[in-house]
Image 1 (tube, helix red, strand yellow):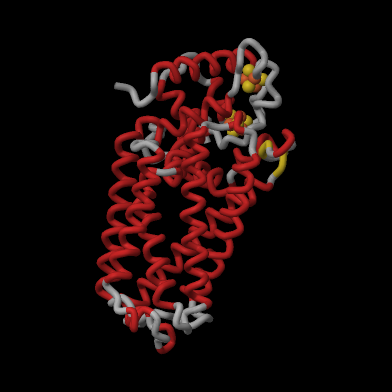
Image 2: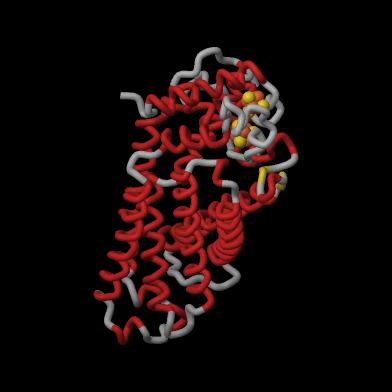
Length: 351
Ligand code: SF4
Ligand code: SF4
C-alpha cells in the first residue's frame, strides 16, 4: 500500500499538471524547476517535490488559478499535506500524548525517588549529581538518545524512497544540497521572503528558523563538549560560566527562545490556507518542547546556586526526555527529508 492516500495523490498530480503547463512560478523556488523535469506525478515524485517546498507561500497569492478560481490550485497547502504524510508515522495526537506522558512520568518518578530534604536543599556550587546520581543520569539519556537515533533511523529507512534519487558519491550535489539547506534559500520565496500577514512577503520567518536551527546546534554542541569533559577528562558538571558547555548552552538557549517564540507567533497568525493543519500542529508541538527545554535549561543555569536547583534540574531533564521521545515522530524529521530532497535536486540539476 502506498504511503500517500489515493485522493491526495490524485489532487497533487492534478495541481502539478496545471503548474507544469503554466510555469508562471518557476523563479520562486526549487519545486518548479524540479517539476518541469517531469511529465508524470506519482507518489514518489510528489513526495520529493513536497519536501523541496519550504512552504514560503509565495506561489499562492501569485496564482491566477488559486481559489476561488474553478481550478482551485493551492500549491503550498497541497504540498504541505503530502509532505506531512511523507514523514509522519503515528498520528499527531498520539505523538503529543507520547511526549507529555513520557515527560510527566519521568518527572513523577524522579520527584518520588528524591528525598525532599535533598530536592530543596542548597547544593554546594549547584552540584547536580547530589540530586540525581551520575550513573542514573547517564543511563537515562543513553536510553533517550538511543530511542531517538534508532527511531529517526527507522522512520527514514521506511520512508526514504520518498526522496531517493541521488547518484552515488555525487559530492557536488551533497555540498550544494547542504549549502541550500543551511542557508534556507527556498524560504526566500524567490527573494522577497515568505508570505506573512496581509499577503506581504517578509524575511522574518527565515530569520526565526535560523535562530531555532543554529540555537539547537549550539545546545547540541554544549552537550557533546560536556559529555567529553565528564567522560573523557573526568571533569564533573556543573561547569563555570566561562566554560564552553555553558557558553554554547546559553547562546543556543537564548537563540531557541527567540526563534521558537517568533515562529510560534507567525504560525498562529499565518493564513491557514497556506499549510496543512496536521503539519502546523506538529510544528507547534516541536516549538513548545524546544522552548520549554531552553527555558528550563536557562533557569537551571541562573538558579543553580539556590534551593530551587533540584526541582529545576528534574523538570529540565523530564522535558528533554519528552523531546527526545517525540523527535522521530514529529516535525523534527522534516529536516532530514528536506536535506535529502535538496541533494537530489542539486544532483538532478547537474551541479
Ligand atoms: S501556482 Fe498557479 S501561477 Fe504558479 S505555476 Fe502553478 S498554476 Fe501557475
Ligand atoms: S510555497 Fe514557496 S517553496 Fe513551496 S512551492 Fe510555493 S513558492 Fe515554492
